[in-house]
Image (cartoon, rainbow over all chains, first blue to last red; front, side, top):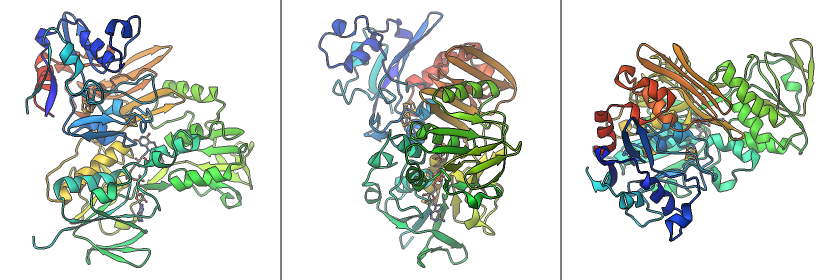
Amino acid sequence: MKRVYVREEWCLGCHLCEYYCAFAGTNETDMARALKGCKINPNIRIEENDGVSFAVSCRHCLEPLCVKGCITGALTVSGGVVTIDGDRCVSCYTCILSCPYGAVSPSDGGAVQKCELCVKTAGGTPACVKGCPNGAIVFEERG
Amino acid sequence: MNRMRQYVIIGNSAAGIGAAEGIRRTDPRGSLTVITDEPHHTYSRPLISYLLSGKVTGDGMKYRPGSFYADHNIRLIHAAAMEIDAAGRQVLLSDGRRVPYDKLLLAAGSSAFVPPFEGLDTVRKSSAFIRLDDARRLEGMLDGNGRVLIAGAGLIGLKCAEGLCGRASRITVLDLAPQILSSILDGGGAARVQSRLESRGIEFRLAASIRRFEGDTAVLEDRETLDFDVLVLAVGVRPNTALLKGIAEIDRGIVINARSETSAPDIYAAGDCAQTTDASSGQSRVMALLPNAYMQGECAGINMAGGEAAFDRAIPMNAIGFFGLPVITAGHYTGEVYEKNTEGVYKRLFYSDNRLNGYILIGQVEKAGIYTSLIRERTPLDTIDFALVCEKPGLMAFTREVRQARLGGGAV
Ligand SMILES: Cc1cc2nc3c(=O)[nH]c(=O)nc-3n(C[C@H](O)[C@H](O)[C@H](O)COP(=O)(O)OP(=O)(O)OC[C@H]3O[C@@H](n4cnc5c(N)ncnc54)[C@H](O)[C@@H]3O)c2cc1C
Ligand code: SF4
Ligand code: SF4
């Protein structure tokens, strides 16, 4: 299955992927208008320290600890994509406790949020990958 | 094998469902029977407090979709298992039926522990708080403005208090210990959570013990009395091990290995009824938590069906929130301490011998799983930037090679 892979050496820490991710969830047509002045809460996050930066989002693990540990059954695997049913999630944060990548985060609504590879929004190619000008994240099959 | 294998699972909750999914991942054909003494579709046990508060209703309780048993070709039997005939390889049910097995899993969970309080039988309305039917019974007992006394300030008692908030005229939680949540929090953390609960009107009697009941009055050790309308007994739970008595090794729980096997051939155990090695401390113990239950069950299922699985990474861990205040804890609390205390953050990391042993996070819990994995994997702390990870959990603390493998490598 295709996954998002990180090429740390190419990341400039520009945070554009975070903006494209947040924008993909808005249904708007103009990114600047949609996000200007907003505090965004994206599903891909840049980690930065001392000149090093890279993007982290859900790995869609083959043995996903978040799914196995979910207390309600809100997290499931569908076609390899680890997906959340926001109506079933009670924000207990067991998945935040479980995920070794820190890839699930609290949200402003009633459920947690995580990367779903844009299956629900941008139509299959993750918006972060499309938007990265540096090729620092790629969407490909690596087995 | 000439005939289909017969798998039997006693228990229809996290561990039993994990096993059913593990079996079907490995053997789509064998006959699979799930036995439960509760008259329900599989439901999420932790949600019973959300049912009380009205946050979750009806179908929202389901742990798996309505089509689960059909999708996995499972025969579901609603009856109690009364006895396991290990020599004859069959389970005797309360309705007189006998269910034969080739591979058996006991995933029977735990029951409320009720101390032998004097006068308990004179209390008009009392209930445990473990099963869906307990929550429904409790709802029936409350007529809107009753006074509730909850014995036990552990996870279950406090979740019950949260769920009842607004549905009772007074909620008092009583515990022997001088602090709440004594099994998962230190004193400072407990004080923060307690004040959040108190801000919603929940009252506490800590370091207090009940001497006896006289009808709807609890007489405490210091002779003080507490009147109530409904009593909730949440003092503790005991693993349901009785079915394997004399058949397999039992300590506090049924002793299992990393393959979820008991000491008896072809009999497995998983979840709250089982006891296994705590990877954070090396000690054998019952770790009664839903994620562990699911993963022990799944591991049992795969092995029952002839696959190869090991689950040797069980650690105590909890994610539990009260009125929007998140609390996440894991491991055990010995060694040196890194701590941070600010208005919205309570953080403790416990470490010794180059390993992270445990942590407590209250308020700010983002990326807690990074810490959990350091404990679970017993990561040597001198291979990461420990000072950085204390400050800020993230993959940045790992070497570039480790990051490359985890973010750029194949699927895990
Ligand atoms: C109020 C509450 C809140 C909780 N909150 C959390 C939480 O936030 N996070 C967390 O990780 N954990 C939580 N827990 C703990 C969690 O629910 C358990 O760890 C988990 O349910 C264990 O799963 P299990 O399958 O081992 O056992 P159980 O869920 O106890 O299920 C046992 C099953 O066995 C069946 N059974 C038992 N005896 C028999 C018999 N003789 N014959 C037939 N069937 C039998 C029962 O019907 C049931 O289906 C909570 C528990 C409670 C009560
Ligand atoms: S959220 Fe975390 S544990 Fe779950 S699939 Fe993604 S990376 Fe894996
Ligand atoms: S926060 Fe939501 S998705 Fe995560 S474990 Fe709890 S119910 Fe499941």
